Figure (spheres, rainbow, N blue to C red):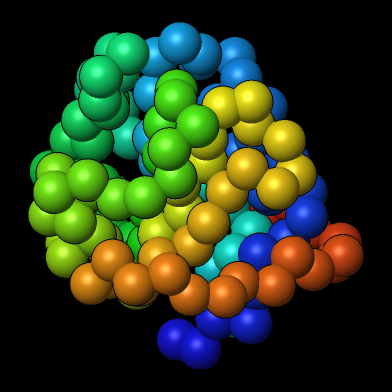
Length: 131
């Protein structure tokens, strides 16, 4: 799927979730609708500490992800070796956010760890009805 960008509301959610779990890491998977990242999937059993977050990928439901998101409690916004291993398993767009989790404290990376551009889009996100 061609990714056009991330919804501003979704990026704001990521920042708020990262602040609320600080000093531990926050982690989830990115989902997109019509080429726009709009949802964050939080997997059951995710373990989080000040050093890392471990996603239990075997807990992923039968849906697709376009990438991952996680926070670094430090202000260092670059992938570690462990991040690169996760990137290789979970899509092509990976967001890392860093403390203090402001609007400019994030970057997007490809599956191989290269920094890539990701536009922040002002779009309305429709809630899917749960049946």
